[in-house]
Length: 125
Image (cartoon, rainbow, N blue to C red):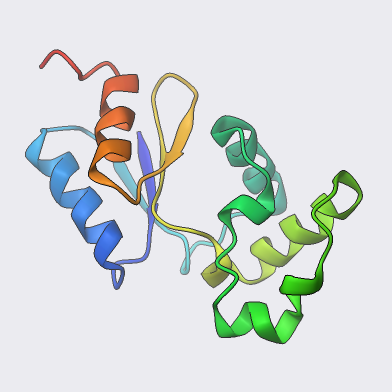
């Protein structure tokens, strides 16, 4: 299991606290320091079952500067969104947790983090 996080984010800290409390083994990726590539974003989006606009923090100043609010949300525009996320990782919703079963979740709620734990085979421990 891996968690993409920003340590300044309260939702990220809560997710880490819950994972630690459950005794789950995981690795941390500080995605602002180690931004994901476009290829990594495509893989995570596939695992999430989401589109790039679904994990974009559109209220960030960088999003407004880029004019993301006016971008199309179509297959034709998908790569533009992915490249924007790769180039501006602050726009990526957080935390993202990749579960051991090959799926991923945006862990903004306790329920989502617990689901990631369950998907990693820790639901009975």
